[in-house]
Image 1: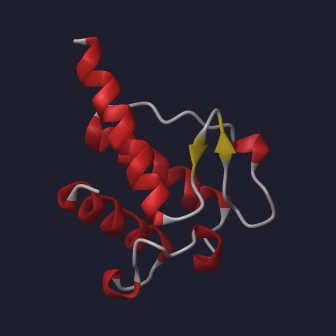
Image 2 (image 1 turned 90 degrees about the vertical axis):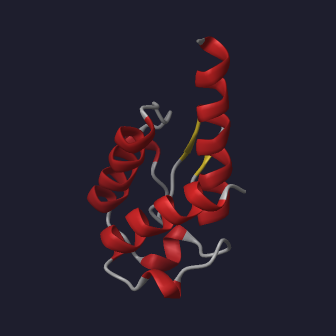
Length: 96
């Protein structure tokens, strides 16, 4: 897990969840942060904008815990989000 990407994503999630960044760990579950669907979508948009990537998701597939897992992108924990973003960045680099 890249430290810079982890720090960026943790900062974005903390802002949207309105919690202190020090409260978050790689294993923090998004559903435990009780973010509403708008906060989750805004989090994804912020990550996409920061890294110029497109995160595959469908807001209509949100489960009761406000996590989305569509097209293989796992949004259950901070660690899985970082892993997914790292993969999208790597894929983007291989296309150029």
